[in-house]
Structure formats: C-alpha cells, structure tokens
Image (cartoon, rainbow, N blue to C red; front, side, top):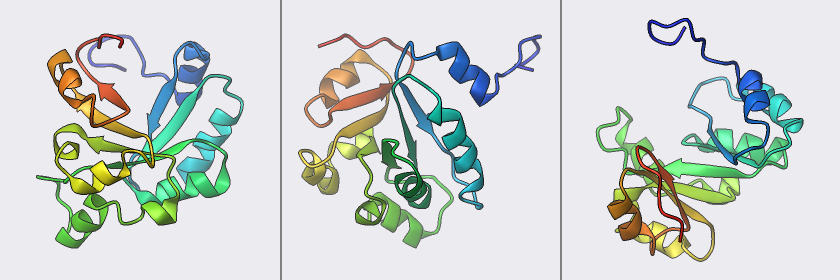
Length: 161
C-alpha cells in the first residue's frame, strides 16, 4: 500500500493500461545485476502499448540490452555522480559517457547543473538529443534551454515555448 492509505502502487501493466497513451512516458530502468530478466518483462509489457515512450538507464549494459533486443528508443542517463557510492573508476567511465558508442543510445539524459559546463555534453549537443534532469523551477528551465533539447522536471509545470 501507499503510505498509510488503502491505495496500492499499480503494477507496470496496470499503469500502462491507465495511461493508455494519453501522455508520452520516459521510463527509467534502475541498475541491477541480472540484466535481461527485468528488461524482458518491460519489453513484453511495452510491445503492446500504443503510446509514445522511451526507456533510459544509468547502466549502459541495460541501455545496450534494449538497443539489441528491441526497437525501443533508449537513452543513457549520466551525471558527475557526486556523493554516489561508486568506485572512482566507475564514476569516471559513466560521467564521461564512455560506453555511448557501445550502447548506441538514441539520446542522453544528463544531470542539469553538471551538463551546462561539461564539454563532453556540449560536444554531443547537435549529434544526439540531450535531456537535462531534474529541473525544479521555471527559472532553471529558462537557464538550461540553450544547453539541451528538453528537460525532465519536478515540482512545477514548465511554460511551453
């Protein structure tokens, strides 16, 4: 149940039936060890979904799985990983989007404050769509608009330009 209510968190298939293509979905697949099991279930659920969607993950091997096994739009999430308990070498590889050529990701979602100054992201700007996450105000959305193609927002409804 959800907190102290009678409401239940819907299963993924229930969620898809409820949304029923009314809005585009950006689905983040969280990191895990047994790549292929959850992804196959996600693939099965989305194959019959008639709305627009894309999948993304911080794990490049999950992105690669979707690119290899589906025709879904799949993107690479990344950031500087500050304060994240990862080995330094992993942070460097992920921060620098080292696996981008391997995954053949369709887009990159980069942490907004890091993405504006990071040369690697700037170089990708006209080669791949760039999304910035998580933008939390209209002021930030306006500030980031020249650095990315779209935003992932939270806590406000951005103005349409």
